[in-house]
Image (tube, rainbow, N blue to C red):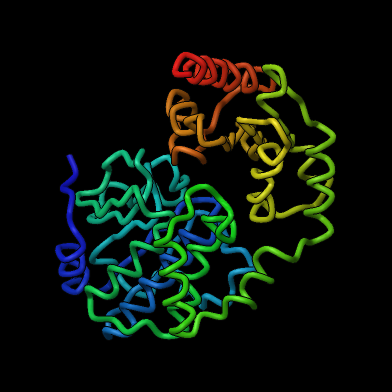
Length: 323
């Protein structure tokens, strides 16, 4: 069982580390990368050696994070995971390190406690919010480079401060990061206001596959491997598709199904304030947050749909009973 730490205890452990391997989750988003990059730059400021490792390539849109990726340049003495709720999220390439993870820094209430020790704050909108406080405890100066990293994590996990997980803390931390030099306007434009043609084509295909269930309370879109390959879209450019079905008026549960290279379906669940997305995903072996969660299911498209829709039906029924 993991040992839960507070900020001070975690900061002390990190300050005592050197030759640190920082693990991110597969299909990396802005929070796992921003958090991992900020920790890398913090170790760099403390004259410690560190590097970041991810199962999948880091998307080009995040190249300004200037992450040093692990390529065997040192022998890891310590392994730290950031923004990773469970071992299934590491991907095959990182499974060799799963039993060596000393510390996990996370904000998912569904965290499985796989690390020897865990700093968990489920009230944080992003792991990068936790990292901001943690670096302060470590005595690390928030440089413009680190500010860009942390702003990226907070902005992407809150949908540029539009999602329901956004709190006053999110805005306040973002303001402090801007004062430290985060290029908010430039980063927002890069992350949210520019779409590649391939991404637009993938969105068109997904909307062509739009389906409604439960009297319009649930909307579902999906992309098969054939759809993804024909559009030419990169996996990293598919992440924000998850907001599309939930944005439809009257929809309480938005589902996005994306077929993975191995044939399984990655399912993203987005909900209104009344519906628990994490409860839906957790019953299918996944997890996440109350309004945003996910899971991965084996089998064909019809089976994946049937499984997740059955759980949505249960959750909607539970909400009706509370009324």
